[in-house]
Length: 76
Image 1 (tube, rainbow, N blue to C red):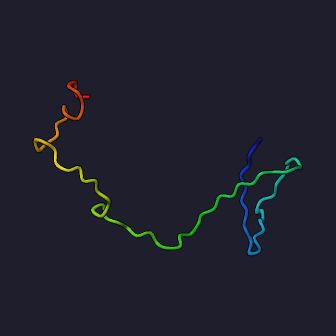
Image 2: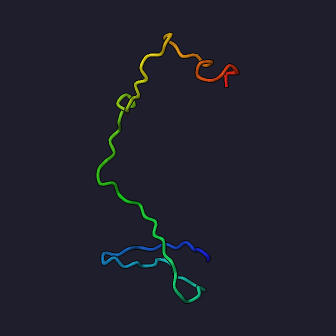
Image 3: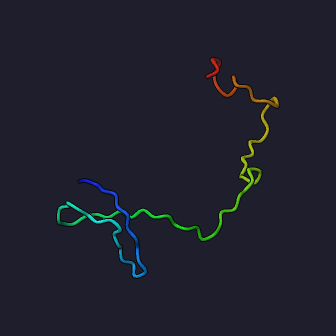
């Protein structure tokens, strides 16, 4: 299976109109994949990192969690 890239336009009647001629292609069935940019329906609102969800880890014994407590004695 081979692929080519061409430009096309979708008209108001939902018909695909090729903007470039197709030369030297064999006759037969083809598979078409359409790539298009969708316009956003609503503008994306910016959210502050301060409003992101937070995991409450509670309190650790000793008030601090050292690297050696998280990993093993070799620090990895």
